[in-house]
View 1: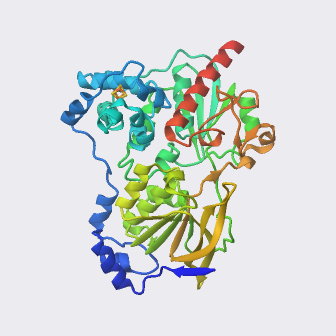
View 2 (view 1 turned 180 degrees about the vertical axis):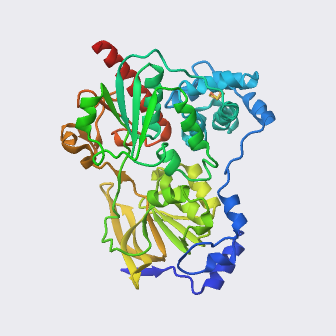
View 3 (view 1 turned 30 degrees about the vertical axis):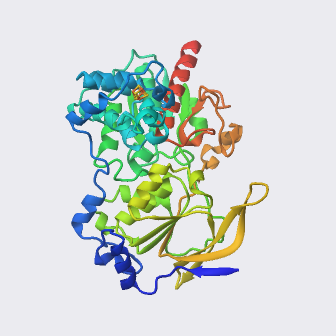
Length: 477
Ligand code: SF4
């Protein structure tokens, strides 16, 4: 067994080396341990402001002019919510921004946040015919943001609650799936009650996405807009399995939608002693998103992130932007297998994050009860294509290690009814209409099997479930 220590010899030399790579640094970044206030106050504002500034009106007109308004447009096929993209872009080109926003929001009521967080580079923009002709797709996401921001800034409500059906539906979880379902149900005339365990609605849009992607109050502004349709009652601080049960909801409501997301974080698969510095990436991002003064949020000088998805990119980039001097993502397979897109990986690297592939953690080393470094083993695929360790090891010094290796559904929250719900790969099994195996119960978003773990896919789940619930309730009436 071979060990390659990657510990820098001394902090000052490391600081000079980082400066030489052209990264913006402050002296606070070279302070050892987990500390707050690593950056000058004005840096936090800059680092957590809008990562991608909006298009100006002129830029939007020029960009919309690049659209070929394709017949059977491939970008529409690639959008999980089926937004009529050429139609909304044509309306921008002709100055009809209200009509453009309507095209977007009637298919995807969370189109403003999706315009910011969707991996368009692997969805609509990957399919755009301009990609092949000119190697640069139409900037669909930026145009979508332009139209929806225009609408929200003017407070124009486009949707109205349908005539009351006399039916009541419980929606558990106020994230993208639950809110999309609630909004569509309200438009169809049903009385909806949304239950959420937290203090605010929005789910991962409010608590789980990198702050610079949804700068300002866009997530809450979208929630308010959505609730503006009317007919949606909200009950916060209500946790399934603690304050309410699925059995009770099935008794009290005509239908139930579960958009409960995922609860527990996957373990590293190695011994995890209770050390200072070992963190769940989602919990830290949540704390960051709810911290008003980011100079008070402690972060390590050296940070290691284990994982290969968007959460790994988000936590790595944000800790770097909080002032961590050295941030490394370690993923057990290659760059192509990371679920974070190549664009996301580039973004992290542009922010000074290093990505190491083909390695997995084998041991957390401690000093005085705190994390000191993480030992990794290189990996490769064996003859059967299975992941195997090579025996060669290295260590990364770390004040903090973040687990960003996915989450699992906590079935306990579903009580005895959880046993009646069919599952698949540890998540709730649903059919094409998002019906579960339990009569009267639908589900969508991250908690269901076979999904893409994307906000936009969760929105589509909620919409499809609402339409299915509506059909079922009207057939029963
Ligand atoms: Fe416009 Fe590209 Fe969609 Fe064609 S594929 S309609 S050019 S955005």
